[in-house]
Image (cartoon, rainbow, N blue to C red; front, side, top):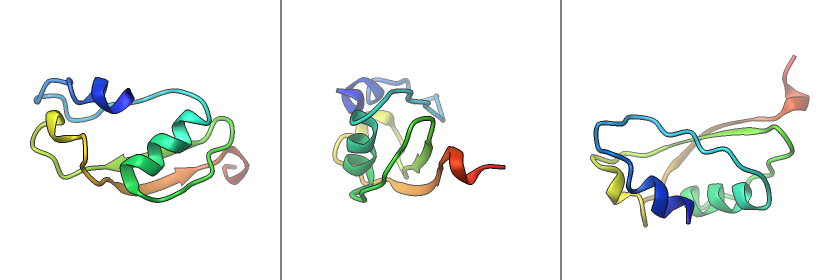
Length: 74
């Protein structure tokens, strides 16, 4: 559902922030990157895409640029 909503974002928008909780966010990151990541409470994952238009998001493979977990931050 999140992918479908984001795919309706206007083309001129360059970045989208999705906020949610688990297990949904872990599943979303895995769906977008085909990589499994543990996302504890308050974690942040950055996924990038090479897309010309958000409508191309369904089926696209994203790149997991980083994961930031609260315990790893000072």
